[in-house]
Amino acid sequence: MSFNLNDKSFDGSVAIFNNGIAGKVNNVKVAVNKKTAVDPDNAPDYKVVFSDAIGDVNVGFYYPVANLLFDEKRNKDLEGWTIGRILSIAKSVLPKDFVFENKDTAKEVVDYLFNLIRQNSEGKTVNVFVTYGTTQKASKYLGLRYFDFVESSDTTVSRLAKKPADLMERIEADAPATDSASAPTTDW
Image (cartoon, rainbow, N blue to C red; front, side, top):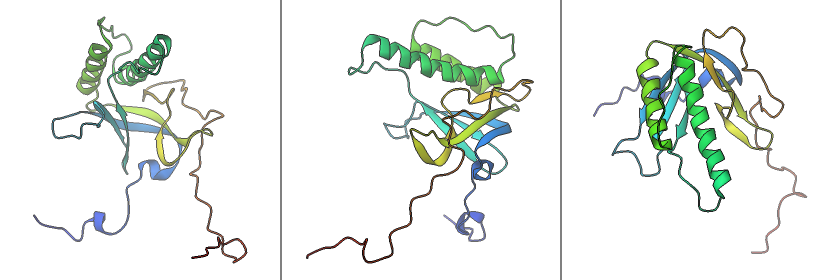
């Protein structure tokens, strides 16, 4: 093994998608990675990587599986949301008049859609919307919004715009207290 100490990976800089700026990002490349035997057991079944000239952001997808803590309606809703998100990605790289095949199970649908994305994303770009989470669940990292997060690059009327719950600025931790009055006391 050899180390190139002149490589940017050793200078402390980190490639950050869209320079760390939340919002709509145009002309982003798409790649799909399927879980392999060497991946950890808890790795997502599929990972979609969106890359710009600087860095990338990714989202993992697991096969929909019924959660025993939820009722049937909740499990069906979760299954539909997962398939809907994957379908959004597929529609962003497929021709507008593409006719999808019917499938019998959620697993078959997921495999079918990711195969279509993989086959049709080469050389194409999409637009995505990234945030620092929501007002209910902040994140210190850029990530894709749950819904309305991707569209074809040739979309004329975009629906990728800020929503009221989107966090557009990175949340920073408060600085520690510096005065002795607010410092915790210990008796040991």
